Length: 173
Image (tube, rainbow, N blue to C red; front, side, top):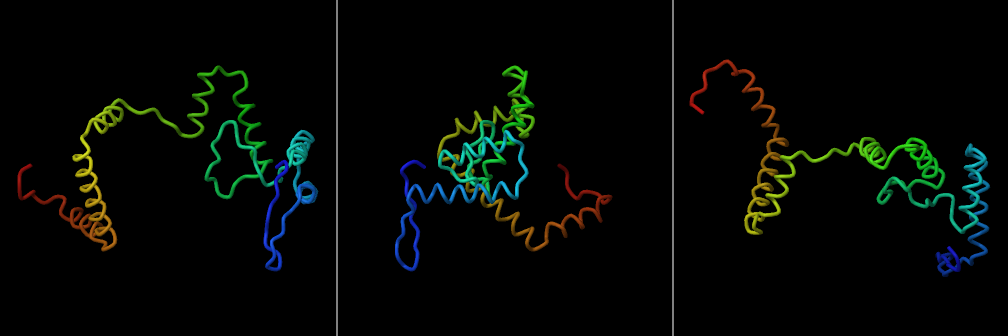
């Protein structure tokens, strides 16, 4: 946050924080954070270095292993630091292929089946007019299912099927 200023409204006047004030606020925040949070000496050094570089303890540097965009609430520095250390330890001594496999398994990533790949290829080759029509049909089906759910007709239909499952089907498939 070098040479940056932050503005806020105080008594309907605009006030601009100077870099020195920001540094002082970050140091106060660090002291309060250290008083209430248990840390190892290495974590404390890393956090102090982060704050000394102009950041708040509540900011994070981003993770080497995980995309944190849109995470709510956003994690603080120490949470990301600890998470990255755990990943680093778990990946220690593994080959690139083993690291990829570990991370995919950790995050629940699964490879596409051949059937899924074929479906995606077919979707890419589908003309725009046909895609629009398919999308329209999908939306209509969605609204129909939503109506059945909200009116409880799906449960009633299932109850009817269950009650008559031994009955003869009135038509041939």
